[in-house]
Length: 133
Ligand SMILES: [Fe+2]
Ligand SMILES: [Fe+2]
Image (tube, rainbow, N blue to C red; front, side, top):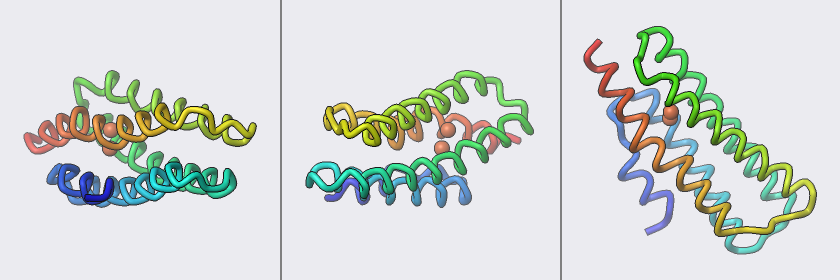
């Protein structure tokens, strides 16, 4: 089972727009992940990283607007995770630009955390809350 299929099964939250956004991120991240492990060129890694980051920002902004609009109690913790992921992505982008694709294990941990653990942990809580509104 590819990373994308694995993510696909477990990413469903029941919120149509957020699920579509997550699916796009999962697909982009799976491409990036595969590319990293087949030792491809830094320019391509950078392109895939930027693509995944752009899709991630769309999703983060959308969720943050919903949290503000509906006064979600856990919004600070949730936004803190978003900010941390964006910082990590930016650090990796900087490393690749500097010619350092040093720690692939670390890279794949970030991708899994960012795409997978956050959606299952944090996003599901947000969506459960939104269903009560
Ligand atoms: Fe999300
Ligand atoms: Fe989120």
